[in-house]
Amino acid sequence: MSWISENYEKAALGAAVLAAAGLAYAGWNKLSSVDLEFGSAPRGPLSEQKDPSVKSADMVAQTKSSLQLKREWAKGEDEGRSVDLFTGVALFVNKKDENNPVDLIEGAPVHEPIPNSWWLEHRIDPGFADSPLRDEDEDGFSNQDEYNDKTDPSDAKEYPLLITKLTYSGDESLQWVLRPVFEAGGGSFTFEYADGKAGNKVGAANPVPPGGIFFEKGAAAGRFKLLGSEKRKVMNEKIQAEEEVTFVRIEDQKPNKKGNVYEIPAFRKTDARKHVRFDRTAVLTLEALGLAGQEFKIEENTSFALPPGDGEKPYKLTEVTPERIVIEFTGEDGKVKTYKIKKGATGPAVP
Image 1 (cartoon, helix red, strand yellow):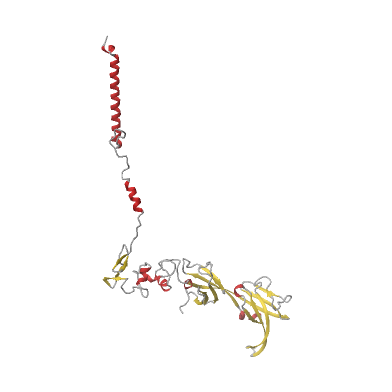
Image 2: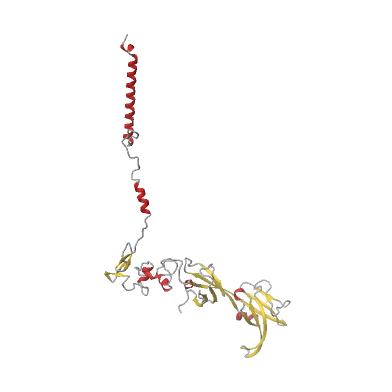
């Protein structure tokens, strides 16, 4: 009988010990290869790592504490003069003397009559030859305009009076003639009306009495009111003699002309051109606030706003002719000022 047969239990125990040792080595070898590949350290009771905290975690608390501190930039000074924190005292090259720069604090004004302090106060570069003509806030007004009117050249919502940028482009006029035809008795009259677009009339069957409003419909419907009439002696230049002429007084009922009274003599139809009247509308543009070139129209004797469509209407167009317009403006102090703008001109003429 062999030794293995006689010592079977011992042989089996020894084989088991060898197998366990082999498995332990294989596991240790695998773990070492993983650590080598991923750069990680073994964890567990056999690990040499003793500190479980996150590296540099203490910096989080320091950062939060720093952010809670109140930090303010203090304005610098140079012998009593305030200076920019980053560029120092603003200096500009003097084209007449390059070795001595222009000092905006102590030097003479670079753009008279605007003082240097104005440019510094509003943080505008005065270093251009046309700085007074530039429009810093793009509201349509130059730096010179804003200085003259004491407005903020860096704020597009603050600007001088807009009427100074109003242009009178021209007028759209409707000419009309109202002719008393004949007296029907009791101060009643018949009438004929004509303009460049339409005509109208009141016939003998229904003459207009004193105090009556006409026409009932059609052109100029409800526009005129007969106030009364009177006869006067008038020199007739053709025959060099006086003759009696009937004058009627008509009150205009058109909203923008209500209250206007016309004295109209009885005249022949062939003389209609001598008695022409006009309904005039001004064609305007506002050369500011990005509205340059955009036309809008205002009838004579009508209040309007600037910019067009604004709620308040402090302006009133009191007169329109082919040559000029006249505008009244009521300021915040309640005082009324009158401005005249010639055709083709922007803003009223300097008084």
